[in-house]
Amino acid sequence: MILTVTLNAALDVTYFVDEVTPHASHRVTQPVERAGGKGINVTRVLAALRHPVLATGLVGGTTGRILREDLRASGLKDALVPVRGESRKTITVVSERNGDATVFNPPGPHVDPQSWRAFTRRFAELAARADVVVLAGSLPPGLPCDSYAGLLATARDAGAVTVLDTSGAALLAALDAGPDVIKPNAAEIREVTGRSDVADAAAELQARGARTVVASDGPQGLHAVTPEGRYRTLPPAQLRGNPTGAGDACVAALAAGLATGLPWPDLLRDAVALSAAAVSAPLAGDFRRDLYDQFRTTATVSVERPHAADSH
Image 1 (tube, one colour):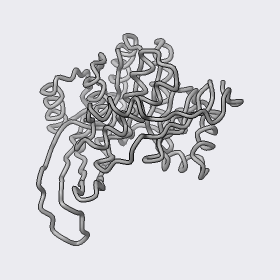
Image 2: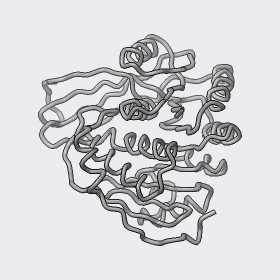
Image 3: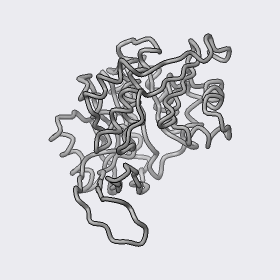
């Protein structure tokens, strides 16, 4: 079973407009509301791939209730833990003309110590049943930056493989806990390392504690630094669409590959294929199955440096 963790779950509201123009009114053609947050998007993709998956995390208030109802209506299993306060709503405005997405992310509800203790107890129970644990997204207010580090240690002690997708101080603090895989994007990895070269930045984060680093670089594909070596994976085509769910689809493919024991070249090919197929879907958490099946056989993986000297 794959367990996903979304500490800052959201009700995602997506507006589709012809084109985003500053200082102008816009006619919304297809407003959509549904449960989201990075870990929940990963859950949707894994469920579509028919992997056993359970979503946990924190939700609160009326928005949290709507969020859980949507998960259940979608056939997704959850073990979300209630908190005081109101879960956030995110706003994404997608330009149908060029596929650009503008995202507004509120901070989320404040998490008090009592609620956090209740969650960590529940998480320990769930992690003991999981083969892979995915921790994804931002930390809500009230949680210290090392919160993911504590959850990673719990999952490791339970024998689960861990995948982390977060950024900034939370990412750096988690490295001491030795996550099996981290999945920053190019902007995030440059921010925390100060390096312009994504592959070199990934190698630095591996040296600082992550066993494997998979850095997504949009149309430039994936840079991976693994214990077996460094890889570069390129998508077979440049696609236009909504890119907001591409990273979550990539994380889902990584979790699925780790759960089934795929070798890194095959796993990375799946990850870039699923990520590209997600760009062509209108909403984060979805992907086009036909493109995924096509790209799995046409995406290219090259070895940049075998047997990386900085592996551990």
